[in-house]
Length: 219
Image (tube, rainbow, N blue to C red; front, side, top):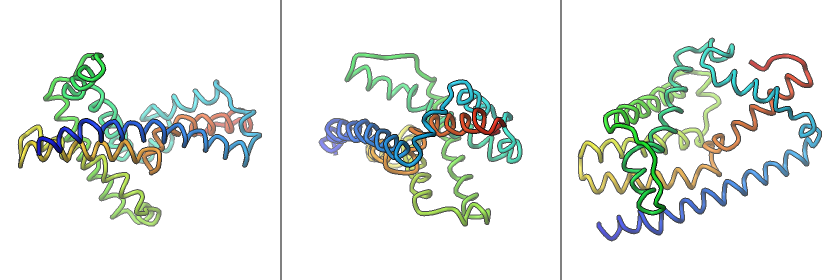
């Protein structure tokens, strides 16, 4: 198991990061070329002012009618995304790895805070899963890709929690945690998780169209 662990945190991790970086570049370039081909005029009315205005409104939990109309889902959505970004970046174990491999480090979260945030993320995934299963309109739009995009981060954080609390075999849980994390990295450019790459650009496009062309709000 030690040799497999070394492979997972070594060569496999480099492969995962390589696929993520190269895949993200390819995806963004290809989507730009597709947008230019299908609707080249849209690039001419992209506006920093209207795009940023839209982004800032949608980053406010009470800044849009959509957020206001679904307060519970809005709360869970914001908690999920905050935990998904903050925990991997500021978890002590992750920062130690960056220091070990690249000689760089930054402040970290207390372990208790990171643990609570990880548990909250898994709870958010359960909420999203139940919503997709029980709410008729959401269930109608849900596909297998949506379940995959939800399951990958849920398992990544769940195995991390189990490893931290030493439930089951700590080494096995840690390996599964790292494997799921690497699968998540690899899948980002090619799955529903790719919205982390395009979300800002999509919102900027919508804000530019509504503000600069239709002269109305998109929130």
